[in-house]
Length: 517
Image (cartoon, rainbow, N blue to C red; front, side):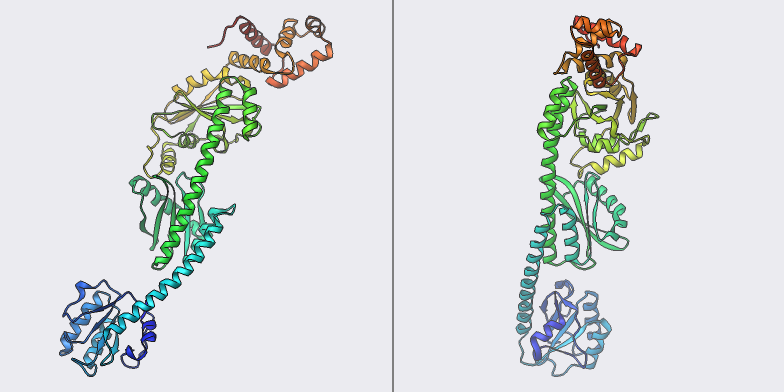
């Protein structure tokens, strides 16, 4: 922005302050020439107005009214050209300009007004060039910051420092905010509230509002038509063209990061869904191999199956995050961390299934109310482009089971999920028959020994080592080793009468080809 002081220094004797005062550093938005009695309809404010004084110089009353109108329009300065109408500046003109808060400059006789206009645009060109070079340097630094592991934080910090204010990035899915400086964190709740209103409006453009008396500009971070987050800025000053260019660069960098995350999440979801499908259909060994090959890591040995009821249009990701806030049955653990980290999830027949590690569940009972569920849903909806979660959202959590027991417990969990009251997370106890059916599947899938037949003969002999080993044609120590492996795989004691009874019946059903409903 060009100041009156800069313009005076550029023009020298061609533009001087009236009297003994010096020019101020007040910015000048433009130079306008007019001899109208009231030029304010053609002014925007902030200008240096050049005039010969013809409309007002002859009368003190006219001068006061003229300057008062300019002051009300926020004109910053008047350049009085001497010569045609005035050879000196009348005192009443000086007094009128002081009363209106307008600086008075003198253009000597014989100096064309065009000299002042040219000087202003010459300075503007230099200023724009300087700002452009500064902006390019800043943009280059921001682009480098975007390649760092903490790219979002580095870019937000760089933007705030470039603008001399603060900046905050808030993911639209209610993820963690990134703010700089740290003191700005106190504004996050208000910024979140504004972003929620922005979401519901569904207009993907910048918005300006006030928080605690300071102006804030909010920019949506778009990937195609989907809003992934919001960039909020408080600069404490008027943004220049160079500032806006830097902001657009940061917005683009954040959008690229959001797109990268979107691709990674989509790929991981597809891989996780493939492994989950195998688990739901009893192919635990195949699921282990898929998980290992695609980098999902070692599958947990003990899991709890979470079923979430979906309605048409419900987003599975939002539904999973909202499910942890449902009002829960007594004794159920906190699921928030486990759900957030869960890669094993799949939608099947209008139910989202999540395979949660039993060891990773928190001990604090989860719970929530309809207000918290609604807030969570609102935070997760991207600018109204996706439907809010329906009021029928409900979920069911099963008991800890081995991977092989999942198919046997699936029907019971599905029924409980479909019947759960809206807004509730209910507990589901695994049926003994279903668990036993799962044990049979685990034993049958074991590739290195015939554990299924070994356990069957062991139970037939009612736990007698000699009779079992003789029937199998193996040494008693070999039998002991196999029974130890089988007990470890299914996580039960085969000498427990209740376990032995249900497992024996499941083995018989398996022999005859009968399944559990």
